[in-house]
Length: 308
Ligand code: SPV
Ligand code: MG
Image: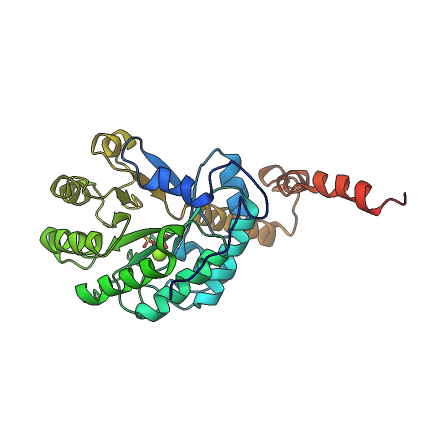
């Protein structure tokens, strides 16, 4: 029986002509007309800040969510913890959220359960990678066994049959990360397209874009292509535009920025036993109040707390 989704943000509960979050994400990720950008978020605050900076969509990053929880990006955080983090990210902005669902936390059954719950949490899309459980972050080590191609295609089909058009489904290929080369990556892209994916995420950890671009020129946009240029960050965005890439994910930069800033501030406070010298380098509390709309709460208090 096909899962019957409830209506979710931003249209939940009202007659509204705004596009749904899924439509918004689909317009970005599934279109080759213009290059789109998804900014990493790992909690409500990072999501809010990304929206303020003008981003039109968010990437709920597995690495960043795990790191902010103090876990390694090796499926140490559970799928329910991922769903809880996604809920906070979704609730904090009006932006569509593409969730990094890792490999789906198991086989087809775990993957379809995860995506059903992500949909209920208000996610607009999910990216599933052809890794084995427990996964290991793509940017570290050499242990990246690939899932069997047919088994992973089954995971994608199960997800598609479960959430149908109500969640954008991105199939992520780890063949280049695992050192299997271009032919294996293209073979997998065909299989995943056949299984119902809406877009292909081709991941590479080379320091130049060459490997990713070889895939793109061979694939010829049979499905839109999503990339994560964390290691080939020097490549100008014009190269991605010229290659007809659909979406760039800035996958972990708020988390890494926060880590660097927290470290600097903690080191300074510990060394000087004082916060005086760092005050001008950190966000004033007024900025936090403004970001989290304390003004809205004050207005609501006037409306709902005052006696008639
Ligand atoms: C993430 O942001 O969790 C990603 C991208 O999956 S990477 O860390 O490069 O695997
Ligand atoms: Mg990840």
